[in-house]
Image (cartoon, rainbow, N blue to C red):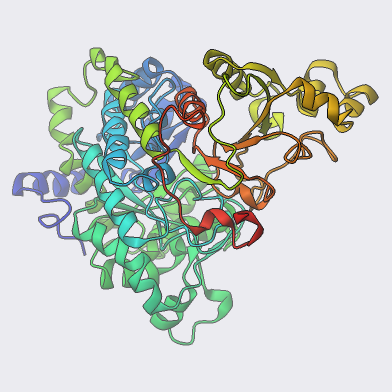
Length: 580
């Protein structure tokens, strides 16, 4: 059972009195509602008010819009809730996770590429300030996963690295930054992603480590974060079979569940062995790692019965609320477990002084505070993060430096995900690349991919032929001095592993040109693309498709600034030819 006077709550007697009196005054429906975190996609205020009135939800997360709209939305949440609401955001990389127009600073991978933890602190600092400005009080970060498997694209850029000490150092720095603005923080995704290559949106993840190995890696990370006072932990839809077998001798393979539904992992391991006294929430409940584990009617109350305190997102609000209520009434959720969960939820709210702020009318800050979103100070931090993180993985052919003085005429590819992922629009990164290349002084010809041609001209035989016929190699060499290949691939909840994908079979994008002209490959996202272009002799990991990152990468390639970032062996994807 929770001890609200201890870490991470540290509540006073008066705070605890508010928690207990609030619980005592609640109806069963109000108690059940506190267990849910709603995802607000529609942003229909009339509908939202009805949800608050009828279902009494404990927390909210939302899809991003401009800062002023998010601010008004969050004000509405608090004004129409009987009990202060936990309002969460996903600020993995900076304030861009709190609102449109927020400041991107750096991915965790970029933080891990630097030589200290100041970049991770900056990410947390900017995340906290911009999230607090729009009225958030809970940040779903930091990511505490360990990227051991280079094939894993779920946490490829979201993990600080594969060294537990590096992850601990950066995660703690991130937390320090966030807490300057008073937000609660959340480690994710217990018991740890990065061992395999599967996406829990599509399938249950499995952390295959033996117990002793887990204790010294993921367990070590979580123990350090718990001891430092982390307030909440997100349970992933990830099984830890060896610990389930150890803690439940004789458990059948078919009964091994993801952590979100496994009491031996939440109650016994996380709360018992690791001593976590804070709040546990599930990862998103629409992910197949959870939905395929058991019927929905059992999943919903089963997560709370397993030891999770809050359930992240509804499928159908009325139905899921009914499932949770039925689970309480039929004893799947005991009175003791429900009360313990409520104490942790309200305890977190009290630790943030939400109950006091509600009385004072200060749950939402003054609107003038929105001026910090995208401010000069934060943009300077983003520029410094790019400076310190952009990584030259290899330059074995000594193509660098390349500048407009020596290689004036540039041909530039931008290899993008299919246009359906950006609502059938051209990749805006392509325009950023063109502008920054030309700003720097290159005469730049942008390649038109099959995607580009189809968006402009439709699917025709001509567009197909233009996309697969290279033309005369000698003419290409006479026209251009250097080739730049910017890789801007990203996947989400569609494939278990994201690989570099050309826009059409036998595309003219495929690197036929690497032996003809100096070629500079730049990844603007994942760190493992050398697997698909091992013929690249010059490869840069830049970690993000922002103007600042693109600008600094071009400058560094020209020798105007040093590459300061570092990388580990994951970037070579376990192959010998990627190192050549």
